[in-house]
Length: 202
Image 1 (tube, rainbow, N blue to C red):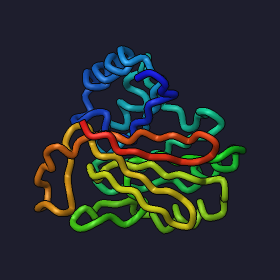
Image 2: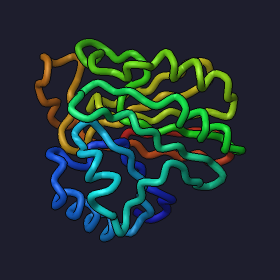
Image 3: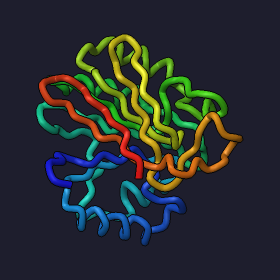
Image 4: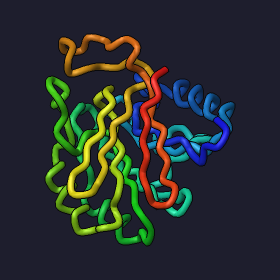
């Protein structure tokens, strides 16, 4: 973990939303010793995530800065729903407060996915696109939910989905069949305003 400025988790810290799972992952991040920032996913318990458990190590900030970049942690989780939805007013407020290059982190895919993975996306993804196209400092969008590594660029904005570290899927396999050996994470380097993303399989 040497040389890492931060760890970003795009949701699903817990699978069942129980308090002990948040305590467990908090202790795990403490042992790693790298600043860690999280937003919720559809498997998270929003009440527990934001109010029920107060993490000692990982942070649930709406916005933070790393190496001159502003990171926005956007909640797209809706209780009892697999699909996602974000609050446009919150995104607008946060974007207006950013001066440097911006990365937006959310759980649900704001762009179309491949094959059978193109399901239960961000419901208001067209509104998301409409908002960020007015802010030219938005350079990077990071998301999860698909359990599949994806990298694409639209209008000079990079959209990256990391594979899950728990279990991975693949659009080339039958629906919900585990893609063994495809679990992993993304290693992101934003040095000198250039964005380099490598998928690290575990």
